[in-house]
Figure 1 (tube, one colour):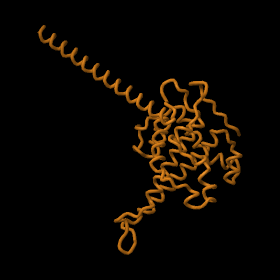
Figure 2: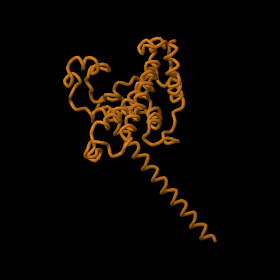
Figure 3: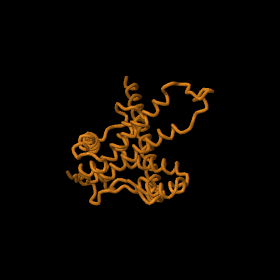
Figure 4: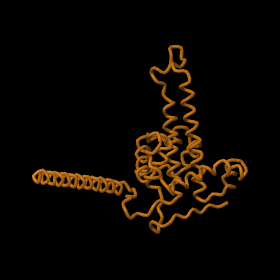
Length: 250
């Protein structure tokens, strides 16, 4: 009996040692990954996001959420452009009736989410309901009724970021919103990569004429993407991890 107890103790100690070694190695890998990401971020002119950095401002997070919705909208719209090899019959009709319309409906829903995210972005930046209504050509009360729920949902996500894995379809709109709210730096770096992967060197003005470029190409900046087109523009609180101040008007 005593020999059995001793063997069990030795086994437990061995298991504990192995577990400690594995934990140490995992921590070391995690630290190495963090250092690598930090070095790469510094090299690219990105904010490192290491422990101690002030949190992003609410306005920056709202703009990031809008960028995420824009990315999803662009992804869905791009998928509708090419005509698949087996999409059409020889007479030009679709082989799967309803598929084209279903895809368009997905794009429309993504456009509405982007629309709401843009309104929330404006509101988080201090815009009044009157301004939002004026831009859309509606009364302030109508604008508030249309976007108040989206604004409240965004504020709740800031207070209590959800786990992307809880009750959401992986890769779906709700999953991405939760991921962006809970991991803003990672989400911004992902969007950096997406933007740079899809940059083809053409500018709106080059492709459609200077007038088109003036209207759309320069709306969100000067057209120079740089190496951190999303993460590089996000503002952080200057006074450290203090309570965020949401200064809405009207």
